Length: 187
Image (cartoon, rainbow, N blue to C red; front, side, top):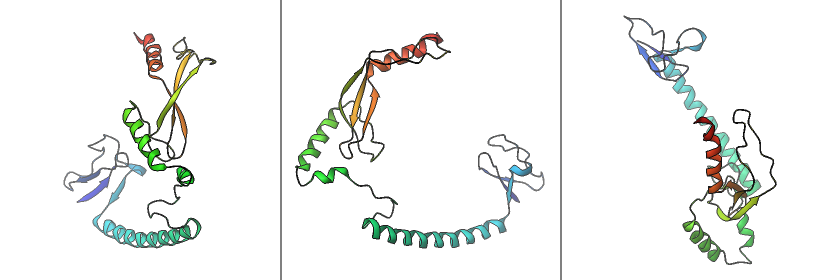
């Protein structure tokens, strides 16, 4: 029995020698001929497994060496991360009670309707306020003929309590304006 791997959906296709090979993948219906098809026999799979084991051992040795080099530069690091995450908040530990800070942060997060994840350190972000945008030149897509968003509108400002990264998000009322403006043309 011959085994074929579909190059499109990566499904293993086993065909019967009596009927011959499949011409199209039964899963995704793409063509299985020419340069796009990889056929594997049992011997090929065993050779690949041996090669993979050798490669894994080499990679493990390289990873251990890199971890040792990283420890020299940054001090002890986690095995999972190649670049250490420096917590910006730690620099304030001597001057402020960070336990109280963390408790207040948790209480505020519990009351928020939305708490986006910080793209830098993946902590939940605090809603610090709303910024009203009055000076704004809206784009007018030719497919709509009208602006998607018109001033004044509001942006919510979120700040990460761990690394102090800030980001904006369209306020709820103005999200409705955007949705209405984009769906009005399709009625």
